[in-house]
Length: 430
Image (cartoon, rainbow, N blue to C red; front, top):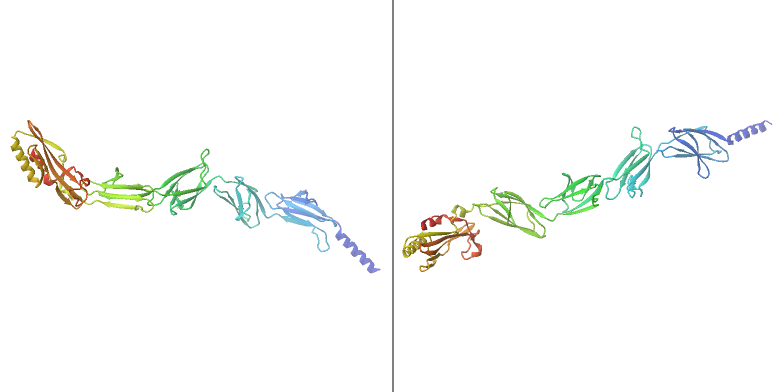
């Protein structure tokens, strides 16, 4: 009888265990809402911060706790022989959720380097973790956000709107070491990404020593063309930095005086330019620089003009290569004799002499210098007989090269100077 009573007591206890059970649920943060999830996944709010549920012995109860900005947590309560349900349960939301929206609409979101393939994404930030989010689109500057779920750090936002506004342009240069200078500041060499802020313009210089620099402006202002996604810059035109001695020597480029002493000469692609350096009293220097893909000009050149010895052996004169008329009261025969004597004093050889017409032309007298050749002659013509007049011309020419043959007429040109040997000849005639 005693054993039967004990059995009944144990059976009663077992039935009590398997009966309906009430559980008080509290959640952290207390602003979170507790929902009961039905069999068809419909959620019914039970309370905020706390709720009481009853667990039937025949049916499990599923609850979910939600609070904006947190990853929801769910839990199922079921009565079983192997586990005891608590009277109270505490559910803590720890992992954060950030809803990220990006623009333009076809931009892409990367979470810790993984492409989400969309412009909208949920970012989960677990407790004590850090998550990096990047928003990218070709032609735009990438934006990066870092979210931390750590004590003492800024709480991740519930929503984050990340618009891409600044443009990004990728520059490729030839040669590959061209300097890319943005608004006066060097950003890199060769392949470089350049950021152009929204509603702004930037000026970019593409610079390499020995090349003509290229300068371009790019803007992101309304109504103006958008910058290219990729900019290919090819430096072709060359330049030569020329410095002269003497420092005041004139620099001519293709026949045009450009400067004195210092000048940067541009040599366009597939062309050649002629540069002449000259100064009175010095030997003229002539250079040709080509940029034809085979020949390239030097980066810089210091041109020193040697002293022109012909200059030091002559005087500047307005009598050179000019006809002078001399009138005389002497008889023609006597005048002819005087003219012939003076001419022979300075010139050994008379190329042509005609007393009847009063014409004398000497042969060229040649004088060689290290850097030039000077030739000089006298031409006398009878201009009138009553009164008796003669025109006299002292012809002075130079070649600009040493040991030029006197017969190379095309190599000589008029010289506005007279060798010291002949500086008095006109006054003697006069």
